[in-house]
Picture 1 (cartoon, rainbow, N blue to C red):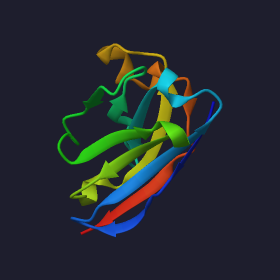
Picture 2: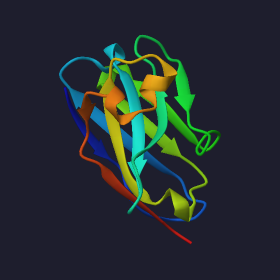
Picture 3: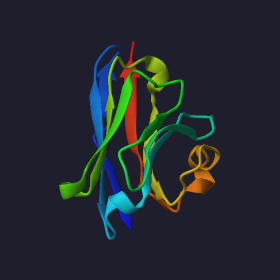
Picture 4: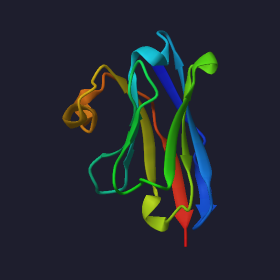
Length: 125
């Protein structure tokens, strides 16, 4: 599986942005698909995931209510819709694919086998 993240950019606080993660290889529905981010000097942070085999989602408290993860099966693409962006959302955003379904697993980097290259999101105040 190869993942390609895109859609990042420079926006102002309060704006919205949608990130895309396009995949090749096995269909995304067979994987739990997640979004992480990493800000300078900080550890990679779990944001949201779509569980494999169904449409169930899970979000970190830091983005719940502002970010929405979704999947377009026909395009083998996963999206992260980000609303009401804040300067503290500035980071490199990564998509990932893995086989985990347990919360403790899907929140960790090592719960994922495949990673995209990252896309930069910068939110100005």
